[in-house]
Image (cartoon, rainbow, N blue to C red; front, side, top):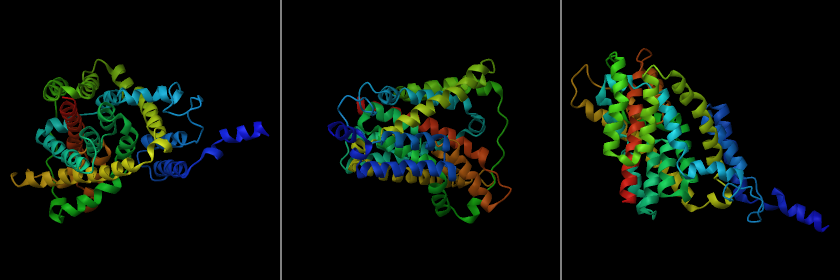
Length: 379
């Protein structure tokens, strides 16, 4: 009987709490949204399943080495890449190898939209401080507004590692929910005339321009924000691998097998970090709420800035405000939303290529913002 009693005490049935049940339901919801609604399945399925893995109840602190927060466990070793900010630069390397900056180079003023969308980061930072978070925690929470999961993880790993789980889940959740969150804001902030604006086709960009851009981009952005070098360095390195034309194998490896492997490890461990006994608390709820506000403000900031730019542009050169939402760095989902909403009002007005310019600018902008925050908070 003593053996049976001990066996029962080690089962999950004996150690389960309401918190575990709640998180397991959240994990199942993520998997459902990924499969049924196709909301970022490459992210939500690893994260959702990771939530299930992280919330299998067990007896803690007895040396079983099971949980992600227990030293010596397999999950803890895999989580090292998150805690030390190793996975995000590798993700950026893959993004750079996949990204075509031609639309941005053909119309450089669109980079301003990516910069304007970062307003969500700084307004949320102030709000988080007002709610009692430390400046370091507030900076890590604010970066959620950039809609860039890897950047959010990178900054949190440096400033608030104890909040990585909540910040990462929040950032990736809102990235996946771009098709639900952004359209109502876009419709609310634009009128019927603005939605029908046709933009000039992008000009052809030469191969020389494409090769020069990652070099100049690296020098300009990292001289402004050296702290963002791990992210921006790998982003532009991946891009020159793609555009040089002589490192095709390296570019394909970075853009496909490598980024897929890192996404699996990142998603699984971020999901597993939501272990109910550590994750479920008041701060996590506040972070999720602040993340939503940050993301909505960033979307509104991008759309509003396009409307502001149009005040100074002549007829024929005006920009369609529906591309403003793409200033956040959820590549390419926010650009797809611009395309979908634009086609609702004009079946022949394709905005995807135009929206990709502020979209990739948002990737750069959020990394620069993270570097600036890191400099201020550790200076």
